[in-house]
Image 1 (cartoon, rainbow, N blue to C red):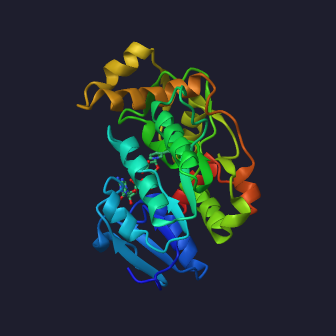
Image 2 (cartoon, rainbow, N blue to C red; image 1 turned 180 degrees about the horizontal axis):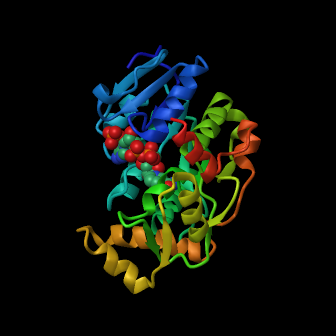
Image 3 (cartoon, rainbow, N blue to C red; image 1 turned 45 degrees about the horizontal axis):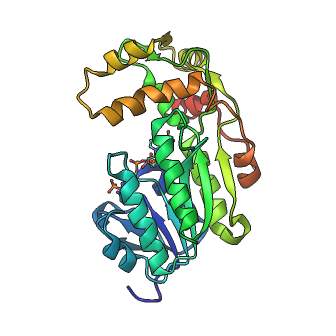
Length: 286
Ligand SMILES: NC(=O)c1ccc[n+]([C@@H]2O[C@H](COP(=O)([O-])OP(=O)(O)OC[C@H]3O[C@@H](n4cnc5c(N)ncnc54)[C@H](OP(=O)(O)O)[C@@H]3O)[C@@H](O)[C@H]2O)c1
């Protein structure tokens, strides 16, 4: 790694969110270092220097890949039993490499005891970042709006123990636009925590109605009991933490833990975030 390589680094650019952020930065003429696990899948962008590394769990390789980086966007890694340990390793590598500021994609309401089990990993990662002495900015995303239409099964039924609970889901594109604004002027966001949500909080019944109205496909919501929720997911072979994550997504809604609507996307980007109806209309328009 030469010292001429960009001092802004972005992870996750082979994926959806990091890819949108990298494209957004490139569109603004920003030079960036893309840390990827597979260089062949990195986006081809002006001003982007691709650096391959094995992933968050390889400390020595991460230290080398981050040499000279001042600001880092760390996109949370793929869910696994090892994710939290990998995150801690990568944070330690960032501190060792002399990175000054880490912008981390966390989760709304991240807490040691939050109902959405993966939100606990995000809390622990935030805590590790704070303890590392790095300057931090936390982007606490809600559930992705982009996923809501995929929650319905082949029979058009969304199943889960969400009750009448609401979710203020946010479009990935709005998370990416917010991240770009932060990365364009990181010092202005030092120490900040932003809740990135959509413009409204919908019940699963309202989500089903919105999808039905927008697509013509009849989608309904079935409020499962906890037992039904685990039983209906057992048809997919998965480790226990994965079942817990799937089911607790809905229980977090039922308990009102993901219902708060924040104005942070609009404050950061200067435009209102996309609604579910808006996202579906954009999709229909191609
Ligand atoms: N808020 C929500 O509703 C929600 C939903 C799903 C996921 N998430 C979280 O948000 C993150 C970004 O979402 P997304 O939709 O962009 O996911 P995505 O399309 O799966 O992209 C994830 C990116 O992170 C990289 N990555 C994963 N694990 C890594 C590791 N251990 N070390 C280094 N890089 C790693 C992937 O690299 P490869 O291409 O090499 O795999 C990919 O570039 C996800 O990784 C997940 O933590 C949030």
